Image: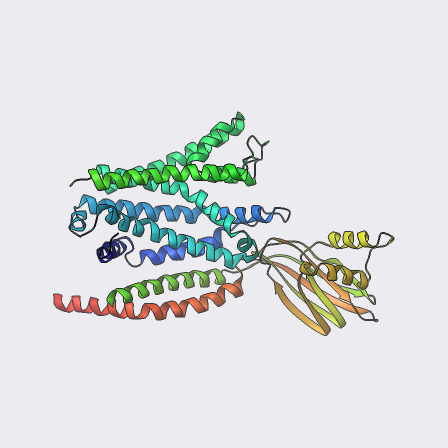
Amino acid sequence: MRKGKGRPFLEVFASALHEDYRFPILEIFAFLYALGTFAFAGFVSMTVSASGESAAYSLTSSVLGMPLFIFIILIFKNIAYGLGSDIEKGIIQTFFSYPLKRRWILSAKLLSALGVALLLFLSIQISALYILAPDMIAPYLDKVLMTYAANLSYPLLLAGIMLLVALILRRGSLALVLGIILYFALAIIANIAYFVAFGIKAPLILQIISVLSPNVVLGLHYNPRGPFMQEPIWTPTFNEVLLYLGASYVIVASLFFIAYFYFSKRFGL
Amino acid sequence: MRRWIILFGRSGTVLLAVGLALLLASLIPTIQMSISMGSDILSQRTWSSQRTYEGILTPQHSLRFSVTANATLNVYVFEVNTQTIYSWINEHHPDLIYLPLNVTYLEEFLEANLNSIGWNTTIDNGNIEHEYIPTKTTNATLAFSNPSLDSTSVEWEVYMIGQVAPVTKVRTLAEGAIPIGFMLALPWLIDSLRAKIRRRSSKL
């Protein structure tokens, strides 16, 4: 962004913020994230013998269930009704009249839709976890952040798909429906595949799921017996976890890159 | 200027929402999960953790207890179990035949393992009440030691408390977050209210 482009960028960003987080949306989500962290924190299955790293992973994973679903609702809403409806109603044309490249318009929109939502989600959850169990979180902050990165890859992948659909079909509502269907379909497929993988002892299935949803590989790294407490079929090393995490984010980044490319070069009204 | 008012105002309302969530978490009633009570006489220069409490605590499972003694008594919450203490002492005193209940052995253990003390205090012919909330999942053992040369009579009541969040800590944070959030949000709230009144009067 060259000098002098900052103000229009902020204008678009402020407008997107105003649209995405009308009072009291932000406040309701902040309230739910904070309360959800305490309500869903699970220490019950933990034993003292579990290593500090493993305990930090278990605790972080336990608070990610429902709050992560709430986060997904927020980003789906922002992409479908923020960006999607701007395209549908032609409001995006107003932004094209700004002295700003299209990629910066999309960046401002995504910064509001995803960036602010992520910042709110991570800052509230990690702070609440620290309040709850400082001696479990502080020494393993890197592992906590890695657990979040692994769990957020799948929602971001869906957000990327939704963004592309919203841009190509120019229908926010269609993108939202597709996002919800994909979310549930992939979650069901992943669970069935997990079951099958342990049943027929085929680690390849787990490896394929891990590329899309690296929380599987991270979970197996800390608990190779899996949720069914079966004989381990794949015990990923830490480097393998990093590899799968990296691969999943390459896919997410590619989707967003295609969306940027399409919006900058091909998108016409 | 108006943008800054909105930015601070919305940050304030978010802080207010988080504060209210913390306050609500602190108001959720606790569950009394188990109870143990009893009395004992501790001989001179002995320690004991028998019959009090030994188990696993988490930040959501705290230990609330009251202890009464008629002389000097050290009260400890160890973050290890009694067997760990016995093993350490037996390792360093292999000639011991009986249980190492002499205070000297305990003091040796504590000197070498200071971090195993989760909490401790001394009672001098009186009563204490305390709630021990760990900051991680840990073993916990409530133990008494009589450092004096006379016997001490001790009575205790122990409750294991289940809670959503550490009540005191969360309430203190809520008490800080709510007023700060309100102060930050106030100019924006006034501004929004004025704008609403202006809109209404212009419609009329």
